[in-house]
Image (cartoon, rainbow, N blue to C red; front, top):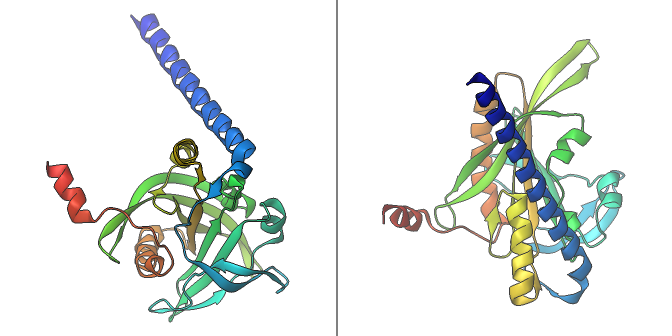
Amino acid sequence: MAERKAADGVAMKRDKWVALTVALGMMAATAGWLTRIQGMHVLGAPGVKVGPVAIYDEHSNVVAAVGVLLPAKVTGFQSRPMPITTAELEGLPRDTTFGRMGYWSAEKDFQVELTTVLMGTDHTSIHQPQYCLYGQGWNVTNSERIVLRMDRPHPYDIPAMKLTATRLFQDPKGPPRPMSGIYVYWFVSGNKITSEEGSRLWSMASTLLKKGEIERWAYISCFTACHPGQESATFERLQKFISASVPEFQTVTGMPVERLESAARN
């Protein structure tokens, strides 16, 4: 009996790995197919506001005159434009559109970096979100699906991913000190919202086949750091910031909550 259970356990693990490998292979094939035919179709509308705004690099040089129109004013916060790194400018396609703003509370005890990366005809503008953290020395310790409740222009939910990370920072006055990071992200097109990379790729493939249109997806992320033990309180503040800021630049919304609840009851 014990040998049979062990064998069943091995088989289950093997089946899971096979399923994962097949899924990843299908996603990779879809991505490759999208790359080959991207120049043959019309580019769809984005799910974020785009317009004239100066985008800067790390040396304060203007690198673009058009960007995602992130809000300069969010109630309770001051803000300033943040630079796009050299690695991003050199590593992402030339038709990528950026938006990045830093926000801090009046008490200066809470800071958020809001970033939007909008693809053009090249879907590789949208990359694995974890890369952003790993590239800055953060170690992701937890990943979970969450729902962000929005109040404007009507109550609706944004499906998102929440990553929790840790990092040691050098302290000139003492030993390195640990910090925690909260990173929340999701993807939007002109008419869709998702937190899943696979769903985004399949949607692009389906829309290409049915309409001959390349969906123009944007990757939206919010990052804030805090001291260990303050993660829950910091996330609550981040949720409030997202609720106040996102309706100012994200044009696509989800189904009104009351309609979702009615559908669930029926």
